[in-house]
Length: 600
Image (tube, rainbow, N blue to C red; front, top):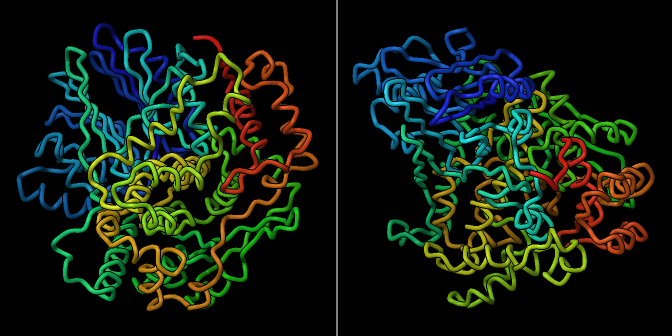
């Protein structure tokens, strides 16, 4: 797990100083070492978190003089030992034991389609020495980020948006489309958009080739089918449970590949508990597990330790309870916001930030349960989708929008000042187009496809990447193993929505984890102080929204801001998010990253 940056300048030498400045912003992502490489029209920078092949032989950017290839890579290829053996059988010779070198040999052997053989999370840039061709790529589920910007006739790329800002020359005007998604689509800004006009992100499961003459070609190499397959026509419910458990077991075991110990984040919910149970089955005795809790606020509990304790005791883990009082959380907010590549309103961002700070003192790699709710239909809006006729996109959209959208277009017009208001309902149009695309059999399938391939990528997965990497901690997410995702996509939706959601997963889990953990009421990562704004948190938000920078930017109508501040906890989104916190977080993020938002 690392951070990569680069510049491809087809008609001039690359700006090595800008690439160096970009690299320097990501020391936290790669605290172990850094490197740079440039040749011709390309420059690469890299920060390394050493997980596989801890020796200098695994350093990056990695150059193979025999093949004439150079790579900068962020992530982990879980099946690299098998690929390495296959490539050696084909005559390739290796100078390291890293997964990074496997990328170089695999590209040489199989060309662009080598990505189809990878099991893992990754973003990379591969450069051909002789031709100058550059290939950028991102993993199937977008676990590893890659941001893009056109600057002075060149394409720059980086693992974080702030890294691009450090290189200079970025158009930092607010993008009205990105702002619309942020305020309407529950802070999810789908690729290629970001909140800034001058920064885009490479979509998941996508390759971007930059040819020697500067031409660019984008290719999507994977797309799960949310339809029933003839291969599963005779399967019983038990068959699906068996297949899900076997696939998840494989996913968990794959993510043990490392030359350092692997721990696990344990919230006490079904998903993380099941991972701990499967790790125990795989022989991980004395596994280090970690849970976090906060002070209660507004009558809402701030921890779920009673559940995580059950699991830790059952599987005899070395368990760490991390208790965060309010006095510690407030100062941590600035750090969490600084770690965000994009503004993220979810309350648990600061929880992951503080949890990662503690966990990084014990291990460098953890497995985490993110993704199960999207992949196995754990959210409350999936069961009602079954009532929408299969071919009625409008009915399906209406059900989804009522549950997930934070604002209507009329609400947006009353909140956003005219220069920044998108002319159309961009989020509604995006979801409508997504629902109408082929490859999803039912209304529930359409919602699951959207959430798995879009919402998951630009909310929980991005949040975990940003907050863990702020402390040099690598998080691995077995529920996003692409083979498991493909299996779940093919599963009949009624098996997933059963038992209030995740029915097929719950039944499979009964063979591994205690029943009381499975049958408990669904919990979330609770951070009560950010849902119920009061005291210093409310003061922080008010100061940000009334600051000279916010007034000069003029994103929001003054009367709308004043109304929210007058009743700070009176307006919640359908998902129980605080609408005032959405505005405050955006302003805090813009100010912390020094973004004017109004000028190119």
